[in-house]
Amino acid sequence: MSKIRRDYENSLWRKLVRFVYGENDSFHEKAGYDIEHPETEKRKEETFFEEVDYTKKKKESDKFFAKYSAIAEKRGEKVYNHFYKFLAAITCFSIIMILLVTVAKLPSFGNPDNPVNNEVSERYIEQGLEETGAVNIVAGMILDYRAFDTLGESHVLFIACVCVMILLRLDKETNDPEKLKALENDRDFEPKNEAILQHAAKILVPVIILFGIYIVLNGHISPGGGFAGGAIIGSGLILYLNAFGFKKTEMFFTTKTFSVVSVSSLLFYSLSKTYSFFTGANDLHSIIGPGTPGAILSAGLILPLNIAVGAVVACTMYGFYALFRKGGI
Image (cartoon, rainbow, N blue to C red; front, side, top):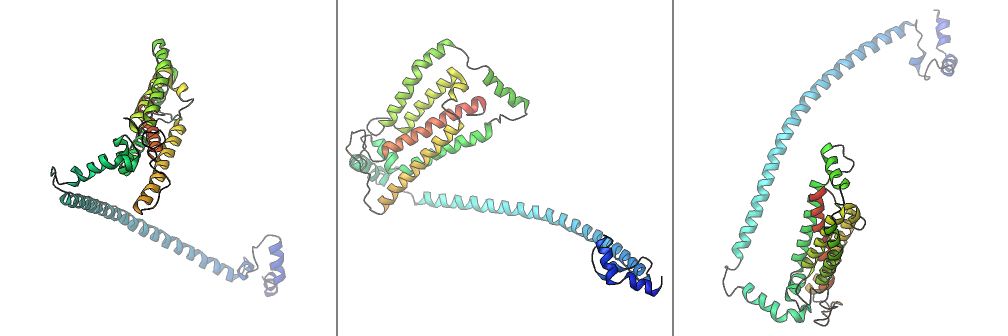
């Protein structure tokens, strides 16, 4: 090709024409090389060797990365295992030392001069009615003096039920034949249509639940309280479930009911006692007084706290039974 022809093909006008017709992607100088131009052929050869060299280097780098990443993974796993064991040992040792030091600082067991044998029990018996307003000394002790312990016990019940739910709950959308069969056995063959049990349950269940409510509401003025009343209410729910089946029970008690009642009760307990702890620790006046001892609306927060504890206990008892029975609430 003549020099004039090459100059024409590489001119700005020809570049624009080729760009418009889609023959080239840009106005860069390398896009204007002619196929027959010797510099174009040279550039192609250089590009080819560059690509070959790049491919070779890439394979070598990939091999190098794969080799040393495998080594890092193995060493990293070993380091993690050693660090985990070391941290676990340090944690256990620290807890053991804290417990040993605490026990060493405690008064000797059985010593009549121990505060637990004189001051604490004396305070509960002699000043419990005046300070808590509860005629039932036990209710005043566990829901006022030692309310923080009862809060922990209530949370233990809730967490235990949640753990059992995680372990035993059966997914309704599962494809496991054994789980599906377990669901069908409880669903398809209920209620059992046992006339004696159902007629007895119609009479006993309302009485049992009402008696449980009575025990909860009168726990601060008579023997009873949230734990005892909640257990009675839970037994009434279990009896109703055995008599009429899950379908009828789920009309008023479902997983959502369990969650809402339990969480609401625990939150109320936590918030209300936080107020009591704050005012008591700072010698502040509390708007919630002990009231008149012996009256139903007395003993400060003990009555609503009994209701909260009773709700958690009732839900936990029924939840345990339902989970062990069919893998769900």
